[in-house]
Length: 226
Image (cartoon, rainbow, N blue to C red):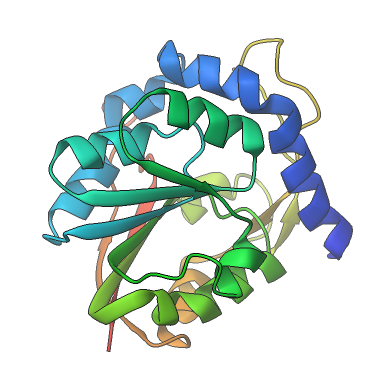
């Protein structure tokens, strides 16, 4: 797939179109891997850093923001999709703000955090690189950036193990989902490089295993600002 800015646009357009279906899937616990593994894995990763103030990047319908808020953290969830933010704000738990990654990079939030987390919310190429570039300015000294993403070795499938745009599908989801967006595949080495070239030391890489397959359900990168 050709790398261009239109792919970045398709990602956002797809989430605008599928916001309602995604919110239903989360609220009805339709995604087995999240219920069995990855929801708990990202909560545990954040809790392990003892942060008081947290930025949830690409917060979607807000489940992680609410979970962390319930554990006594001051959490701001941000997303580019108005329907997600509107739904989140009706739940009455956590703070939420509409913002694109470009707006975050431009300083729209106007506050700093002990920890930023991106839970399965980094799908692009240029947009993700730009976000990484801005994260240090959003963190307090010694702050942490945590990313949970598809495990590269598992998500690679039969394709070559090299960076590049990939097509996706909504296979396994309800028929309410339409127009799947492309996503940018990164190797483990490339993820590590994103952290290290933007001021972070990799403190830990976690690989939560799926209980049925014993294969990694995700990869969690924990970077500490130095």
